[in-house]
Length: 169
Image 1 (cartoon, helix red, strand yellow):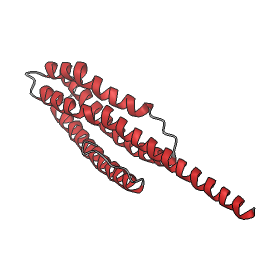
Image 2: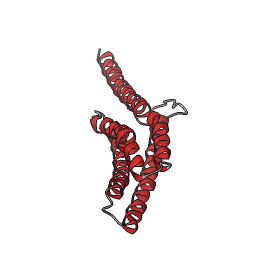
Image 3: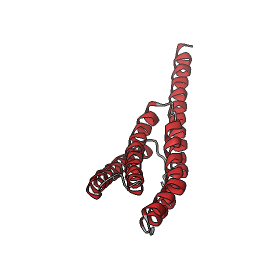
């Protein structure tokens, strides 16, 4: 009888551990898939709009592209990341990395947009504008480095939980 009780308890503990691991893995997959769908999928549009803005005939035209087309997508990505509220510690840690990455990236976009707005209003010198643009570019590089670390973390977590990642992710 005692052996059966011990066996029953051990099996239940294993089932609970497996369920926890499975729930965590499922949350991780859901988080990652949401990130790919709501962030990565918009990066091509952002790059296209950045090029459109950069090749504009005037500061005013570039400002309009950024204000009316680019920033809504950037804000959508920021809002998506800010709305995430993971439950497991593993996904919270991964989310923290992604949130930090997106926050840095968002700040860089805001800096460039603010400079462009000041250039349209002619309330900033070219020297000041260039200095801020360089700082923004440094933030973009920093965001890229944070993205690489988050990608490496995701690869490690996928390995740990025996998950298969798509090439897009």
